[in-house]
Length: 469
Ligand code: F0G
Image (tube, rainbow, N blue to C red):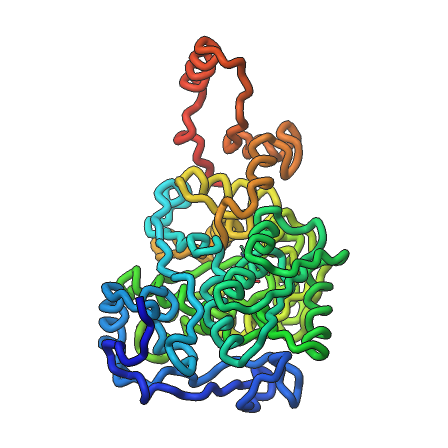
């Protein structure tokens, strides 16, 4: 399989190379180079990539759509990636063979019939970004950022992480022949994510601090050492993560949903999805702009408080605590970008409790779809937005599931055993008990299994346990 530029069907090679423009989201200054810290040299605010498209003759929306569709039948490496398939809206590397890819993207969008029935929303979908190569949405951004890291000649890449970024970065660094340095909060990330980083060969440092402490340290480190930062303040990450939104529109045959709902942690992903929606709208790929809403855990609700208490003008940091460890972040780096896209699309920002997260995760599980707790905040948040009247039952809603169930098996097992979010028999947890399916330990006898089967058959079938809560 080759990835030669000359073999591109749209014959855009040669003419398509453009340099990126990095624009400060604060003062609007343009800089040709993002520096090592990806901050504006004038005001230290974050940068975003503007006008970085591959030059292409396919500027009209309908021909872009058919070009992207046609590429699904091609076998070039660059076309097999569900990120680079949409390359007209991405920054262009110097040559196709620079692209570092694990065939990310191309993730399924599922209907959620049980949640549709329980919420009354007939057209409710989940776009499962946990079906990416390392099990989370991070891969869609990492393919782009790792490509530019290698192109820039870096030997080391680094990130602070609650687990998924480190797993993804380590995998893409390994593919690219770069070394990777991972900074994670000790004891606060799942073993699955940690084990991925180890297997992919990362130098993994478990720091005695939280995610916010890891990120602060990384930002000091990049000023001193020649390491390339792959956190989502890296604007190349954001560009790649845009493709989840483009792909979901393609999967809906370009019919805009009314709402796209995403989990919020460091807020890079919300920024990326929002940027994609706004770009697709301004390019005429969609005629109606969906509302982008962000949901956080109650214990890690910095954006909720920032909007509620300051109208989005000043960050309200929190001391984060939640069992949804992927989003256990108190001082989100991309909060200003997220505020901007939330306000531009007219979306909402909500918070949900640990019990609501656990229930929503189990409900998604009962659809035959496995996600991690951080992803389940989307369904929990949707129920709240529905009760508030912000979402209506006749609207089209897409939830973005960001990580795979296998990312955090401890949470799932503890939930089914009744150990979280509180003891199974505690008040307030009764509703949750109908979602728990604890394992049964038996003697290895046919009688014991038969009796258990008969008892289970007489008890309430799972399909009747739908709750509107
Ligand atoms: N869902 C999952 C599964 C995540 O891993 C993350 C972030 C988020 C949602 C939130 O996305 O930060 O862009 O708002 N995980 C990062 C990490 C922080 O290090 O893996 P965000």
